[in-house]
Image 1 (cartoon, helix red, strand yellow):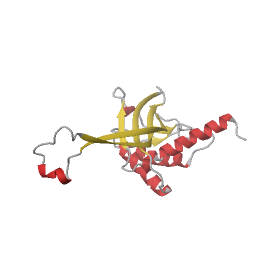
Image 2 (cartoon, rainbow, N blue to C red; image 1 turned 135 degrees about the horizontal axis):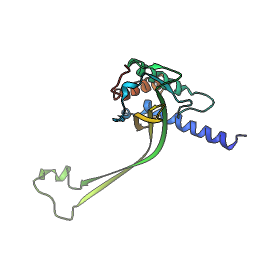
Image 3 (cartoon, rainbow, N blue to C red; image 1 turned 60 degrees about the vertical axis):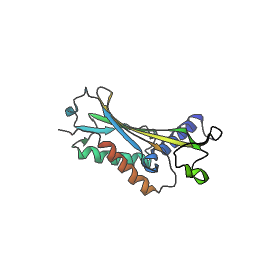
Image 4 (cartoon, rainbow, N blue to C red; image 1 turned 135 degrees about the vertical axis):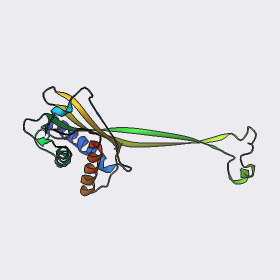
Length: 197
């Protein structure tokens, strides 16, 4: 029998695990954005570390996806001259969330278009009795958001944020998920214009 707090932790982890899959599961790839605090002197930062636990992890253990994110982010940071440290200048957090969405699309189609009435070639319309028909299409989907935050450890202030947003799509292999997370983080960190030193 699970306690209420264990159920709460399990459901939070399940949501986070599903949401991070958006980086791998979006049919057209996630929309990636990033921004930074223009009042901060980034030349002061030389080292980085990770929140423990990160927002996508449980207090008691690191998930597989937590490890994938750590490796991909470390690669990006080290390629920019930063070093992993136990006493870092920058702390990195990864968080995720899911949101159910509904998309409603309505199109108007004139009854007289094409076919028999095509002989008019759009030169003139029919009398008022013809009018227009409308078609409405409703689709429900789940949108996932993944945030990567770089935080000044001393000031406890976020100085850079990368965000990936997209629709979730199922049936991806673990390898496809890893490749997509790596690809999305490469794109995300392309918006990080700084280097250590």
